[in-house]
Length: 244
Length: 267
Image (cartoon, rainbow over all chains, first blue to last red; front, side, top):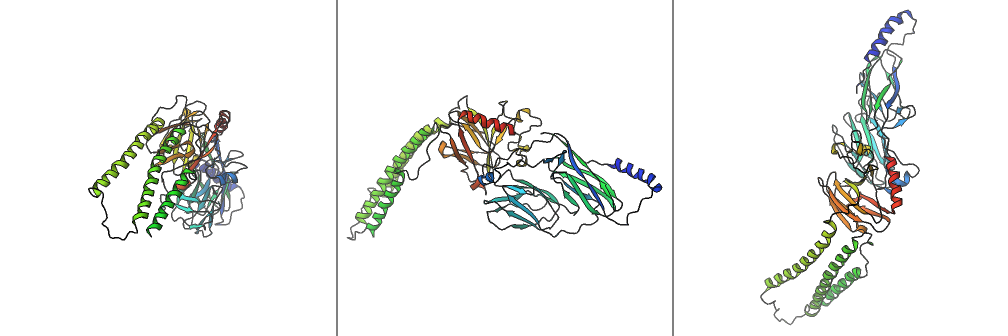
């Protein structure tokens, strides 16, 4: 799945080396931070997301009476964009400060909100139950210690954290359709795509980076991007989708 | 004091008998074709054990009333031959009753569980897992897709481990968390367990059957009354056992056909 755009990069560098000396280009201040932005899209036919029947938990049926919730493993937007893709610097990060702000995960209407959340190691994570019934949150961690806790209605939030980098699928033991991801990343340069599939990784000092995009069903793709100053580079990702 | 105890014994006997005779605690109304046999057998068991219960309790109360407070120092008379023949007689008597009930009851049970299903049964596959039930209908092609346990994935709602990418018969399989069945048509359920033992229990259908991992257990019945009834797991299967339930919706054939069509469109 790893797509190297080395040839593109080489071409760009060579072209730049040939053309630039002849042009008057205002030099970026030394050490100015650059940005990598782009869009995540798919080609082909993605799987059809199914409506989730929550009959077992009548309260959740009522909460979603207007429109049933769909599965979220491949969420698309207009223009073949992909939502819930985590784009991050997987190599070349020149030091990310530890994150201290608390990340919040809600359980509401028998769904994990957000579906995909990113935390850094040891970043505080609070898990709330907003439903009038129990949930049983079960992160299927393999590198970090796996745990499994029941959270009845009205229970205080669970204060927790993840210590080691890992992509952790999370499920609810009483509502099998509930599914989410905790992405523990060492870098602070990450983005989770919205419906427009767009991402921006800013504040990148000059250097050579590997940018990786992860989608829960389609896997990962990576590109190498070099930032030479206060510039914005584009890195688009295209995943190949199949209906089944 | 002995008389008070005798009185309490009598009150307990009368109240607990009344609870059953007046049907204060009883099974919900039967909605299955085979249910009358079960209910008949249950009634026979209740009556025969109930009569013995009442007689023995009242005999106990009578003896307590009559003899507990006697302080005339007369020697207590023993059962002829001592305790051993008395216990042996009780074991034989009670054993004979239990054996008789078992033999008659097994015949009824086997008549329901050990008979082949109607060849025109509607077959529905049932998967039990911690802590939910899922039901699978074969879809318009009338065939079930093969099951691949390694492909089971709750996140993609692939509860049965289907492989629609390679198996075209799996593509139209209808997987739902509610069991819908047409009224009056024989139903054949095939029970599978993904993880541990579970049970399929619908009191109104007079059906209770365990799921055992590794076994595909057939279960057949015919529902006679439309309505919505609860399916509960009656095998302690883990932390979320209390919340392991689903519903069976018994509906007229045309409504069922429409329901199946709607669900097929969502697959």
